[in-house]
Image (cartoon, rainbow, N blue to C red):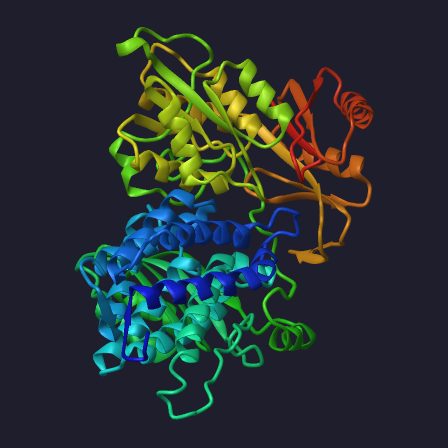
Length: 591
């Protein structure tokens, strides 16, 4: 590979260095967990994904550029773990399609491939969220395209893409409040940056001779927040809807760009979501009002942070802790159920066709299928031997072992689906970070599969109780999703680092109790007090509390907790069951 062009061997070598670079920084990426819980695994998931991709490509002999790209794409697709791993596999998929038929590639080819990778990733996500890995690949590909159109060679294009990715990662907290609150950048975006950085390191190291001995500059490490010593001013956000005439989105975007920075205008002529940083939020709001009606207006002073925190953010590399608001605080009332995007805020495009997904049966044959196959079968993902045994007792067709920090890959889920002799399959991921891989697996089979996006095993058990073997997979998926969300669940673990969540200080080693969306319900040094505080935050009226005890707890302790819960709320039945789940001392269900 030279700075002007690359071939299959060069692409493979560059990808090998990229994987190595991510491996060196995997702990850094894992540490970018929004909550101080012991299950940060984005880096591990992405690393497992690209290692599977590399293994697939390493098996080629005399590879051309397109064959290497296709092998990387297929390996990543099958090995994808976690949401960021699945999105990365979609990026590789788009890039492979763009390089189809090419034995060699140059700067413009790379820019086009990155652009196609971006488009494919965005299409795979039902509701794209900015401030994530999607933003990073989009801004990197845009910079690459500019460099290519200016006549840049392969190194120019890749350098532009890497620098844009670095800056994009640093800006993610300004786009996604939950990141700013936690004092971290987006983990998936940081992982992608490390991959791209490694690719550039390879290219630079192999083109020094061409530079006549000039010293190459190593790509800079991504800092937590760009311009950490500078004020952001005010962050203004609102939804703008047209009142009469269609919105002129181009004019709106241009006028906002003249007023401030970090401008995001997403939508069409009927309605747009606006995000901008500047010193005069009143002018931003006035502009919006001049074009239509506004709802959901929020204005926040981003400079209202202590100088001590800002100094830390400027001085430290990714992983700094800063004060912020609580993540995902529990809202009043039952959560709204969106059957399309539940559980991951993303939805692979194929899921909406109704021919994929997965889950299982409760043991009934549900009718007669061709060639002796049952009509409907269920596959469940379980972390912990105890939880797996419970799913077996419900009669699921297969249990795929895995959960937090050990997410099953797309290939593993696909293999489980293919081994089941059933006309239709339902899949219970039982973890938000497994939903995307499950949905991707459904795209790769001819079986009729549906995903029931359960967030934990307790939701999975409740969903199975609603299974009706007389119904098809699609109808069952909707009913089971609602049934899973009807049960209230808590997860009890210990903080792995100090943090400030809203006005609550969390110290390393303290008990923290989270809702299914990782909203903090209670924190304290007294575990029993924290559990009771969290139970009080649930909607009243439940009659049964089930304690699934996992790592760090034993039967005696669990029974003691059960007695305290029974004393606290008379008339409530309390059951104790061994779950064996890692990282979370208790999974608690109230129904």
